[in-house]
Length: 318
Ligand SMILES: NC(=O)c1ccc[n+]([C@@H]2O[C@H](COP(=O)([O-])OP(=O)(O)OC[C@H]3O[C@@H](n4cnc5c(N)ncnc54)[C@H](OP(=O)(O)O)[C@@H]3O)[C@@H](O)[C@H]2O)c1
Image (tube, rainbow, N blue to C red):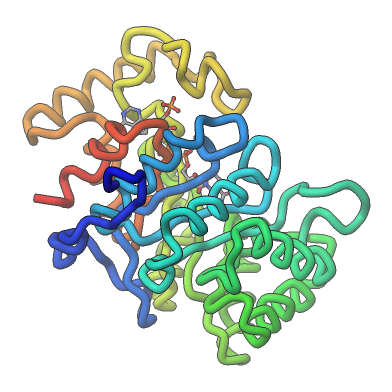
């Protein structure tokens, strides 16, 4: 930032490019090994200047991918509004250097058209997201979850048409089970809108995408895979080693319950800590490295401070 408070991206932001990027499947897109998620810490309830500083730090270190969804906040929509404010204030000159995603699939507005996977919902939601983020298009639009009640062709054709309309450059799916994922890959390929990426929860404590064959399928089909909640929302860090800090997600948020902090977890964390010390890494770095070793495209971290993000990317900047 210069003395007027104007953001100017670091000149050396791509200094570590050779180590930082992975190709997403067999597409033309490179994604940073660590991407930044806006689920928490970027809502209307969060201090804007802190959110802003985290995004500056990210972009200044080559993290070009920001991941959002219609209902990130709280309140719903407000993380996208933060992104819109950042776009206008700081990132407009860098739009073509950013890869911005959003999603629709969970509850967003009242009534029958604000949830799940209908064409009606997906199309309207993306229009709203673009307005909130002050963007003409997103780089990537996801179906946020599989809708067993809507014909799969309806959801997928909406994704195809969104690309044809120029509102998204690529499409992805998140949290879909394996069989519908296979159908989606085939349907989209036939329509020349190949599935760019699958977004699934994967971390040392939650290995479902590996156990269910989803990651293997993505690798076979040259579909990228981005792992969300790679630190299990902070459990796989030193955050809860000595208790529950008042400013932590566990203390503040219903998404992470205190009962998750078990004796078994603490024992595991101490083992990870010892293992990390042998490699010169923190617990978080051990956890992120483990995921990248599984052959994913990117790990999608959250951060409530610049220090956390700095810790999470340190190993890729050497
Ligand atoms: N597709 C989906 O359904 C879905 C679902 C969930 C998430 N996501 C995506 O994945 C992104 C990341 O999810 P997440 O926030 O759960 O990821 P995460 O990286 O597992 O957890 C982030 C939290 O861990 C703590 N933390 C991070 N780095 C730390 C460090 N170095 N040391 C100590 N604590 C650290 C912070 O908690 P404190 O806040 O307590 O400091 C931070 O808010 C989301 O923003 C979203 O984009 C997608």
